[in-house]
Image (tube, rainbow, N blue to C red; front, side, top):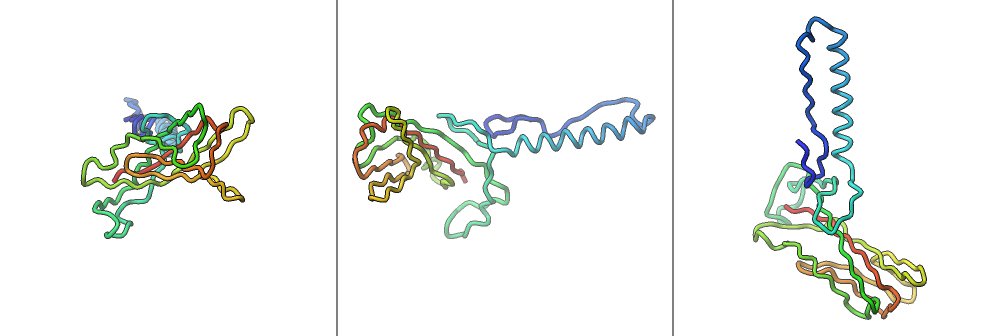
Length: 181
C-alpha cells in the first residue's frame, strides 16, 4: 500500500486475476515475467532517495542500518530493521545578513518526545547565499583566514555560527536528516 509519509509510492504486491490461466501456459509465463518486472520497478522507486526538500518533516527514502548494530551503551532501543531517514528543510532569511556569532533557527522537532525515544542526526548541511554578489557558501564553511561558519544542532535549535558578520548573505538553507529510534 502506498504511504507517501514513509516515501513509499507504489504498491509492492500486484495481483492479476486471469480465470483461464492454467489452460494458457504462454499467458501464465508472460504474467510471471510481468509481475517480476513490475516488482523490480516498485522496489526501485520505493528505495530511491526522494528529491523533495520540504519544510515539512518527510521520509526521504534513505534507510540507515538497524539499531541493533549500535552498541548497547549508545541506545535503549534495539531493532533488526533498516531505519527510515527523515528530512526537513529550514530557511533563515535575514534582511541584515548573517550576524557575527550565532544565527539560530528553532527547528520545532520533538526530539525529546516521547521521553524514551532516541533520535540520531545522520546528516546536517546547508548553504548560505549572497544574492546581490552571487556568492554561495556551503555549510559548514571553512575559510583559510579562519572566518568560518559552523553548523550544529541541539534538541531545540539549529545553530549557524559565523566568525564575522556577512551582511550580504541574506538567505540561508539548512537541511536535517535524522532517524527516530
